[in-house]
Image 1 (cartoon, rainbow, N blue to C red):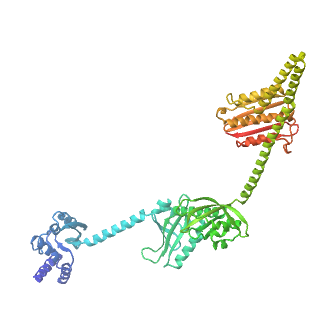
Image 2: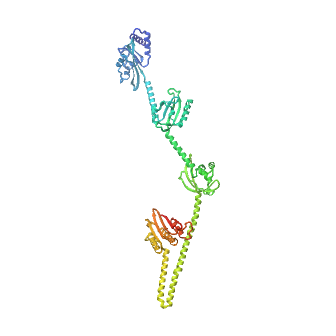
Image 3: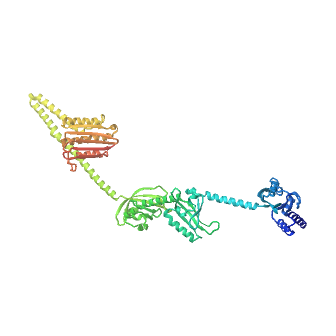
Length: 613
C-alpha cells in the first residue's frame, strides 16, 4: 500500500516539476518529506496536494475520517485540531503564489493545552515560475515554553538588577567601566554617561586609591580569588559615601569577560559605627581621664576588673597590681569587720557611703563611695566611684573645734554681760538709790527730833523717796525695754530712737521697709530690737558721732539691718575689750544671721546684719 502510494506520488511530482527531473531526484524529495516531523505538504496552483507526509495524512484521517492522497483538495489540518482558530489559508496561499514567502507562529488550544506551530509557506520555482508551494507546520510548543521561561528568567534577573540597591560594575582588564547597573543612579545619582568608559578609580576617595590599586593588581594576579573590600567613594554631588563589596576576575568566563564588582551602600552603617567608636572613645576618656577615682569590680567576687588613672594615683598601686587585688584590700581593717554588703545587682544604685581606706604607703584616707550596677563585657559588675574627702574631714574637725571654742567665748560673753548688768545694777542701787533712801531717812529723823522743821523735812523726805522710786522705774525700764508686739517693731524702734534723741547730741534717723513684718517670728523681732539697742549703746559710749543712720530693709527673702555712724571708728583687726559686738553676733547666730562690720580709725562704723526669712 505504501509502495503504491509512493509510486503515485513520484509520478505526480515528475508531472509537476517537469520532464527534466529524473525519478531519482523525485524519490529523494519524497523520502525527505515522508520523514519530516510535523505536518509537511506540497500543493499546486489548483490547491491540490502534490505530496504530504504520513503525520499529516494520519492526523486528517483520525480527525475527520478522510484519506488524503496526491490530487486531493487541501484540508485545513490545523483547523481540525482547534476549530476556534481557523487561518485564512486561501489568502496565505495566494500571497505565496504571488512570490511572497510566508512564515508565522500560530497558537492553538488542544485538549485545553496551548500549542504553538511554526508555519512556513514557500514558493517552488522552475525557470523563475512558481509551480507549487512547499508548506510545513512544526510543533514549537517546547521551544516556546523554553523561550518564555528564558524570557521570564531574564525579566526576573533584570528586575533584580534594576531594583536592587546593590551596584554591579563591570570593567575591562585596564579597569575601565563598560557596564553599571541602574542602582548606580538610585544610590549615587550617576547616569550611564557619567561612568561609561571611565576608570573605576575616578570615583574613589583619595585616601583609598592605594587600596583600590592593590585590589586591581590582586584580581589580575589571582583570578580565582574572591575579594571583600570597604571603600570610601564620592556620589555625583561630591558627597563622601561608604561601600562594601565583592570583586572577582571573570575575564576568562565566556559571556562575561570582565572584572566584576558587586557593591552596596553602607554609609549609614559606617556612620553608626563611627558614632559607636566616638561613644567608646568618649567613655574611655571619661573613665580613664576622670579626676575622680573609678574602678570596676566583679559583682560576685569583688575582684578588680578595671581602674582609671586617678585611682592608681590616689592609692599608689599600678593597674597590674589592682588586677590582682580584691576590692576589700583597700578597706581599713576595722571597717572590714563591719563590712557593708552591696545590694543585688538587679536593685537600684546604692547611695554614697563614707569609707576609711588604706593607700599602698599605709596612709589612711577618707573616701566617699558610690556603687552602680553595670554589665561589663557580659558579666555583672559594680562601677565604683570614689571621692577623696580626707582634707574635707580634717577641715570639718577643725571647724568643729573652732565652733566649740566660739561657743565657749559666746557663753563667756553672756556670763560677762550678765555680771556687768549685775554690777551696774548694784552700783546704781548702791550709789544712787541707796543714797536717796539714806537722805530720806535723815530727813525723817530730823523731822522727829525738830518739831519746828517737821513739815519741811517730811516734804523733803517725800520728794527724795519719789525720786528714788522714779530712779528705780527708770533703771528697771532700761533693763527690760523691748519692742511692743501690739504696735510692731517699727513703732518700738521709733520709740527707742526718740528717747535717745532727747538725751544725746547727735542726729539719728530710721528707715524701715519690711512689708512682711506681721509674718516675722516674735523672737526674731526681739532679737532685731536688741541688736539695734546694743549697737546704739555702743555708739553712745564709744563713737562720739554726730550722725547715726538706722535702716531695716526687706529684699525678697533677705532682711538687712544696717547701723552706720560718722564717729571715730576703730580697728576691726584688734580684739575688742567689750562684749557688745560679741552679744550682737551671738544673738544673730541664733537665727542663722550673719554680721558684717566695716570700720577704721576716723572713718566711722558701718554694721550690717542679714537674716534669711
